[in-house]
Length: 331
Image (tube, rainbow, N blue to C red; front, top):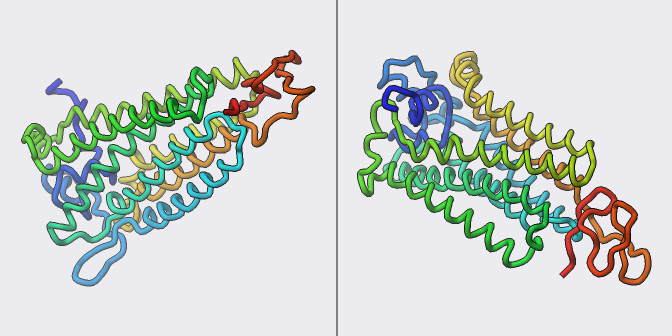
């Protein structure tokens, strides 16, 4: 694999503003400039807004959108509380909490804040490690939300939430450790990734590939749930919309970013649009989840008996699928 690009971050960091790039270079504000100078590539220097003392605020747009994303996500969490009968309400709120952590980290890792002192640079490295761990863990939680809808376990119970939290914590800690060891050379195991093509197989698999697998699995699981179990089609528009918005954000980040940077003389790059479209994708994912779940409990037909979506009668708990939407089983 030495002659392949698998595991290499150099080209990504040359053309984009990624949190992982902070781990490979002491230049926290303009990583593209450093990668261009060291390797002979024409990396675009993201200067952003000029400040005193020759400093720059690189990604003000990303910072502002990240703040908006945090506020919007808090609203979605509060709004989710009102959906008392929704399947996976608590589990989906865990996903939203993870997204808030990602956006808080993004302010420091992608925002291009001026970081002059060694202590400030170490803070950025710490946030970068948390950022990477949060991305992997949050998308893992999203994938598990795709399983929750099938109600293999009762949703919202300590067992369901505990399994999700423990497994997500394992991914968060594992990814965070590799990131910290890369940045601070605790074991010197990843020192080779600090030079050359910046090859780091562990971070490449966890940060670049695993999230794509989790997203694909979530999309497939929800497609099966909506089309095969609920027999609905309209929610698929929201799901496809979320996937499309996320894909557009990634195109801005990995493909168009360098062209935007060059076209604006380093004022902005694709990171601003990636943050925006990811926020829109998260909102659309919430709309999708809300469209297949109920806000309130269905009215019983008689006594403790409830009609299912096929017109049958089932006693005790409400049916999982009623009127083509999901209901949580009351405790």
